[in-house]
Length: 233
Image (cartoon, rainbow, N blue to C red; front, side, top):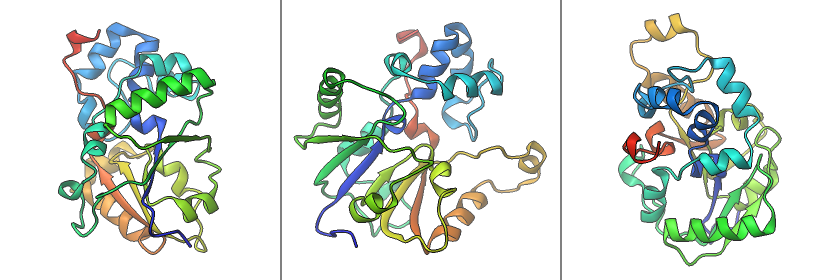
């Protein structure tokens, strides 16, 4: 059972930084301009204009510290600064009033101590917090479920689908709020065309997992960095 007196926030580095952008820039700057100009911030899948799916998936699967250097802090920082997301949640009962600890999941990146110090300072300055930043390495496809259940109150997870795929009927993360992007994974194009309301998919997912974990979907914009393209490319 989680210590409910503590509000511990877990944030994956892939959620804090727009590593999708970092990956695209690592492949081709000019084509990245095209991708950003074509529904980048309102996409429903990680498919980008000017890049083949195979090209992006291969490079993203091999993302590393060079990818991080090309990535940018995203709009999630705005939410984390306020520590209140009632305006974008489906249930206004829940608020991030106070955070007692912030834990950053580094996986799959391998950072040395000096790099962690730099990251620590950058996160504190971005979020504007005096809280100590802790770091862990946890593969979401092989999560430490005991750690999550006993420690995590709020979790921002870009690759939430990988985690949901590990859940079974005996799991119970009822004290945890999982915030994730409104993204679909490997959905048939014809199915998307026939679907009258895309929100139904996310509502169904929330309902399906409600006995196990509290899901909240945020627009992918929150996990993407929005800026005038000419200012950084």
